Image (cartoon, rainbow, N blue to C red; front, side, top):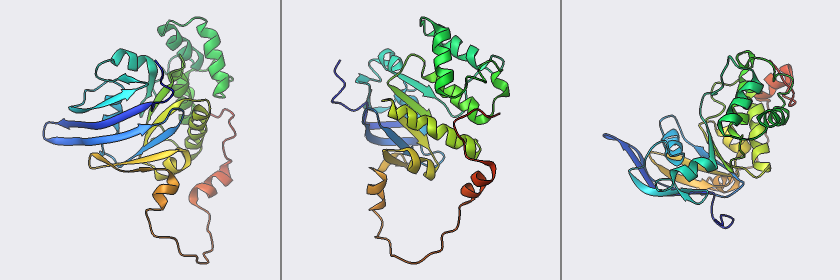
Length: 259
């Protein structure tokens, strides 16, 4: 199937209700291949519900969606082979080592040379030295990086990241951001849900704002900024943000392992 000229994700008119609660009221958006779309919304906006529909874990009440050219309702098996889903909480086995977690997933996917695949991903995510340690000893950022590494086994062209930095400290958040940028640079299409405005600003090629069940705006950061009146030029003494102070004191992540 030629998917080069079509969006990696194509969503039109998706609706979903739970009894009298109307969560999605007609959602429309596209995600270009190899790009990052941040789906921005407050808690309860329906972000996770939409991701569950696109990953075939939940059926929509109305509308259509295609992922990697496959209709999520008509060809769920093909969709699942094309994607990986990383939820809000890292799904690693804390009893196993980092390497054993990766080997296990590679074996479940019936891939050859699972050990070599695991070693390659440990190196790619700066976890080689920690590979022999139990995942339960990892920091939050390391655990999340391992979780994302596990989701990439089999080289899925599309990955869903559902609020991947929830509960992480500032250093761990930046580690995850670096990982997400590297995914897109490598050609992976990323649909990222988040409620953090700075996360969307840092990572996304396009930002879609989900509010009251619909996409109320969708555009680049520059396009969204143009929706507000032009800024007036004033002299303001810039003060450092708390994040800048924190990272200056403890040191910004360098891509090496930490515990």
